[in-house]
Length: 339
Length: 299
Image 1: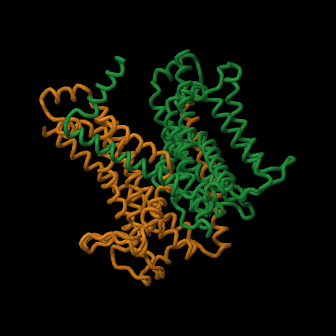
Image 2: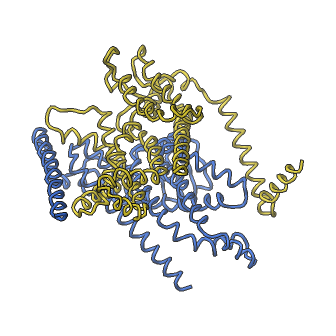
Image 3: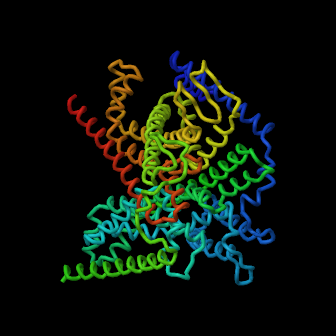
């Protein structure tokens, strides 16, 4: 009873302290209720969700052959189960230790399920699409750009002037140009730079271009981590007789990665959103599927339904990634406290 | 010994690096010869022979490619500067609302920020263009005494015409960037000590006056660097104009590549134009930063 009175008093203090604020609060309440009412009325009565419901497999898998769609589906479901398990699974020690191996194991599993071979019928990458392709682009680009980014960051911190100059030029130029230009010219120029006869398909060209772009940003985040490691750490490592490579491997990189972790997870969430740019450049990922469905005469003009649905999907996946990232950060700080 | 080793290492890396570059350039020249394009910039002065819907300076399709590129650069600059101003105003308001006392207002702005930040910009741009502007019917004019017209052709305001492509881009970029700017502003305001708030309250200043005259000037040094990087992001994001059909510098490069196939040259042009834009933004912000520091010294 007492707590309710305190709550109401607090509410009164924050919402209705004077006339001006009271008017604002009332106006906002009115605004929210009108917006909510209209949105609900639209969601339930006006919107025609057929464009979403009848195309659900298309959003998830693109033009993947119908009788093989269990393959990307099982990959996505295994990723989802693993995320749920990581966030709220039981605290068994042996399992927690092997969780990382499980996560790493999803990558060859995904490649195997998508490409086929070894007992599954092979499927060309141009049939990949939808959410599967979006996740694939995100996972592989972030995985490849992490080591590349670490190397770039170390080079930029290096005492050798030539290496330091080269990597700074690369990082600064990459950070100055827009992503869509990198992706577009990646599609156009990568074939030009390869010897005659060797070709890379569109998906891997996109992954390569994303890697080149994101690694410059990751390098800057890790450099921030490297710079915030106190000099005493290096002196201590020197005094116990570690050589330069051991210092980098055991002292600098683990600490820099832990400090840069929030920034790195932000980068991968950003990367997930930015894979939508491939929709303009001819890959049929999640947004590309939306565009091709809207071009279908049967569903013409139903922009709002499709865009609202796509926004929800992106929002949900981003939120899952953010929750996973927070979980990881918490575990890292606990580990540090144990030391 | 140590120095020799270092020089040796650099030398080795140099050889590997330039060897790689050499192989790549060799491949490139072979491929360029094979496709019969070569590498030169003389095509820049040939007539472009494509029309532009939007041009701040006179332009016809018989003008040169170079002039078309310059018009595209101006178009980019136009949308960047106008959405920069709008995003800053909107972001500041939302940042204030987020830090303010009114919890309902805080809740709404937090919701706004997360929704905008968790969905891709490209999706938002398409939403504003296809739903926001093209969704309006052409006969559904909203008119206010012939001064202000809204239709799916855009907005006409006392003789000035803004196309719907420009407006969709302006709206999308401003709303997207404002969510990030709001977080920068909030960070800046939170970086000012609580004592400052208590001090101006005890002096009898009103909340609004205190925020603007006491808190904000102290928060500015923390805000400006974050703001600069958001402006640079805005400039880079403006290249998504191609999704709504606004002819900015990237869209024009894209058209030229489709016409002439000169990808390498266009890549270099795009790189240079973006370096110019970035220099423009960073230098302007540097001047503003210096002005702020100077004005603080005078006090």
